Image (cartoon, rainbow, N blue to C red; front, side):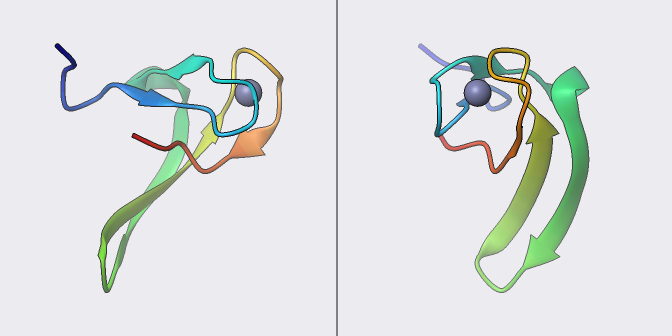
Length: 48
Ligand SMILES: [Zn+2]
């Protein structure tokens, strides 16, 4: 079971928590986020 905040890095698969999210913004499809991945250190679009 996953919470609504449970997302993953598309590069390394590390879990991205809400505290790792740098910015969230509205798109036509919903909400997108940029996050600072704690696993690989890259700024990524979390998936999941
Ligand atoms: Zn990563």
